[in-house]
Length: 150
Image (cartoon, rainbow, N blue to C red; front, side, top):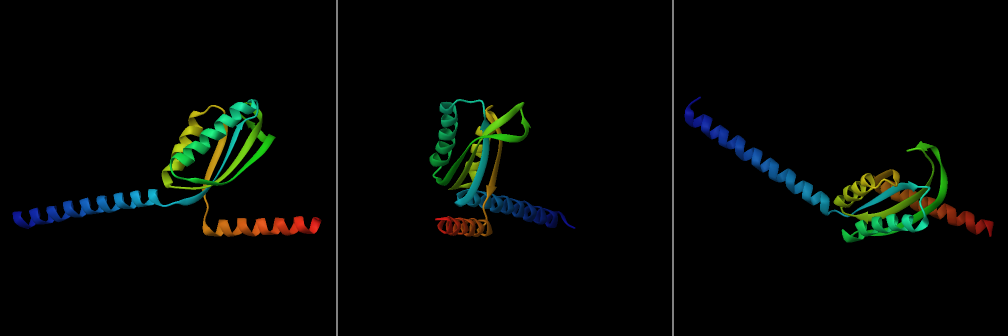
């Protein structure tokens, strides 16, 4: 292989690498711009007073809304006994949050959870179309059962 051929192939390799890096960067940026539906469940320390619990839930709502997301459903399960002790705690307040937001919101919210000492556990899930259909079917079934009970 001559010197010119080696130079030509090295330029092709460099150009291909740059194009691939640019393409994957575009994919990452595009992924962050897509609005997806999420479900996040987190457990707040059961020994906290109500005003501190409200402050934590308000901060989570702010994180979602400041990034352009919308909360579709928020459920508060009152103080419940944990299945096992977490950080020497036996009780916690469960919060289930369904929302629609861009990809970077979940990372920011989970960072807040990690840094907050009163959040015992958390889990965030991306809801697929199948999950959304199952949720809708469950809601319809619950409505029918309530109507039969009346």
